[in-house]
Image (tube, rainbow over all chains, first blue to last red; front, side, top):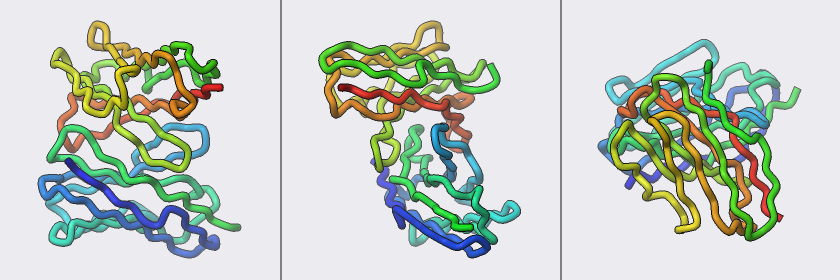
Length: 111
Length: 115
């Protein structure tokens, strides 16, 4: 089955800095890679996703890149703000109908 | 409803008791997932329902865990003879028809504490 590794587990940055979270996957059949943000006491919410036919996608301050050859994808947040503080999860699906999630990254943005 | 609804939000139970957790998916969504989130851990897959097909139970950790989905809508996750290691947040998600590439919408979760 699919295995998704996510790093780092904790990321602390100053407001205005950039943050990068990296994930690797094992199943070459995976073709859909969503990123979820989970705020305290809430369920995860999709913030951006990328499909295997593109290498990069951007939405305002967030972007995701995908390297299918190396089987890794990354989330980039620029100009971080305190409200970006949350737990971020990457996921992969395609080989299976069931999304496999990484272990999560706790992002802390210091004002 | 507008989103995935889970109840209760919090549940404290004594070790050995049975608990039932409820998930009401987005109307029209035929795919439903249950995940477990333990402290500091990722989202652990438990079970997947798609329409009238037999559920994928490959993630259930033991035979104390079971789930059903009545009428293709509401789902109930049951944990029998709860243990302390069952303490976690149980998340339910739904998607339109479960095909890869569809957004999974999550509920707010049920925080289960076994004392």
